[in-house]
Length: 524
Image (tube, rainbow, N blue to C red; front, side, top):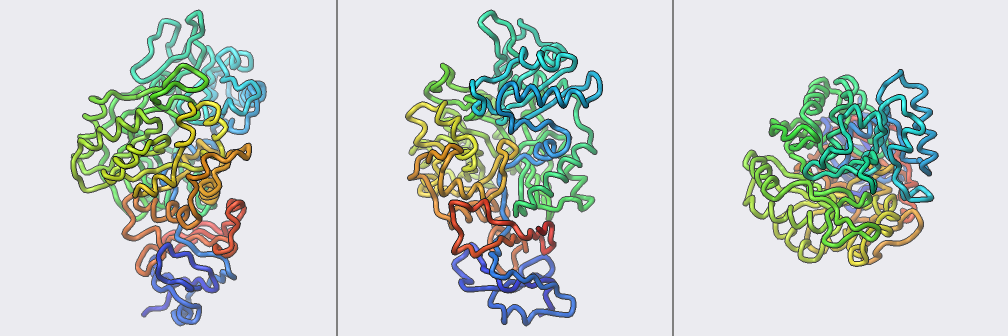
C-alpha cells in the first residue's frame, strides 16, 4: 500500500458505524479514507511526505452535513446585507436602519434581514410608518428572520408600484390596516411584488457571498451543505465557481421551480461533480411557523389566520410530475399539517422513481402523517435549532393541540423515517451543528423552557442525523457521512472525547479542524 497523505493519530473516533470500535487513528490517501485502526496499525502507512495530525484525544468524526441552509443568503449577511437578528425593539431596529442609511449612497435601496418581533417588548411587527420615520429618503425593505415576511417603507412600495388598490396575489398577502391602507407588510408570494423590483446582485456579488458563507460553515465543522432554493442565475454562478475549483465544501444546490414574482423557472440540467450537486427542485407548500404563515387546520393562538398554502393542488401536481419524470429529487417546504397533507398527496401520486423525495422542515406532523411519510420512503429535514431560537414564537403562536407535536424528531425516528438535521441558516443566528444537536437532545428554548421532552433524541442519534442522515438526503450516502475505508475523507476534529461530552453544552466544544476530500479547509 502506498504511503498515506495524512495520518490522524491519538484520536477518539466516532465512525457512525458499529465497526472500528476502539480505533484511535485514521489514514487518508488520495482524498479517501485508506485505513482505520490503532495508532500502531495506521502509523505503518507513514511515508516521508505524510502529514501527521496529532489529535491528543480529540474526537474525529465524519464531516457534518447541513442538509438545509441558504448559502448565498448567509453570505449576503456576511458581506453587504444589514443584519437585524439582534435587534431588540422597533426603536432599536430603527436606529440600525438609520445608521446604515447614513453610509449608503443617496437613493440607494436599503435591504436588511433578520428581525423577530418576539424579541421586542411590544411583540409588534414594524410597519411602513416606523420605517418612514427613520429613512423616508430611500426605499427600505426589511425581511423577517423567517424569510416569509417583508416590511417596506412608503418609497419602496411606491417604487414597486403598489398602492391601496393592489390585490393580493395568489398564495400571498398584502397587509392593510382597518382603513384599507397598506401597512408595508407583505407575506409569502406577495414578497415578489417588491423583491423583483430591487437591484439584483451581480455575479461577482453572488460569488463573494457564496465564498464567505462556505468559509463560515467550514469553521462550524460542516463539510457538505446546501443552498435550499436558488433562481437560475445562481445556478450559473455555482457552476462557474465549481469549474474554477473555488468551492471548498460540497454543496447540494436546489433549484427553485417557482421564483417569486417571476413565475415558473425551467427544470435545471443535472450536475454531479465532486463538490457540486444540482439534481433537486425546491417547492414551497406553505409559510413559516414563527411568522404564523404555516398552513394549519386550526387558527393560530394570536390571530384568526390559518396560515397560507402557496400553491393549489393542481399547480403543485403539474410541477412535481414534471420534475419527478426528469429524475430530479423534490424537496418541498411544508411545516403546517395542512401543507404536509398536500405534499403527501402529491408525492403519493408520483409513483416510483430513481431518487427519494424530501420534505423540508416537517414541523407539525401527526401520527398518520408520520406513517404515510415513512411508507412513501420520504426523507425529512427538520431543524431542531428552531426549538432554541424560535421556541418562544412557537409557545406564543401555536394552538394547544400543536405544541406537543412541534418538530417531533423522536417520533420521526420511531416511525422509521430517515432524518437529516439542519440549520436553515440564516433564519437562525447559530448554524453550528453542535448547537442543533444540543437542541435536539435538550429541546430547550431561549427562556429555558423544555418543549416536549419525550421528543428528545440521544447524542448518537443526533450525530447520525447530522452526518449520514444528511448524506442520504443529498444522495451521497454511499460514500459520505460515516468513517469507512474507501469513503470520502470529509472529516471534522472536535475537542474532547465524544464519549464524555456534556450534551447540555455541546455548542461550546471547539472545532479544531475541518477536512474535505483530504484537504484541510479550516484550522482553529
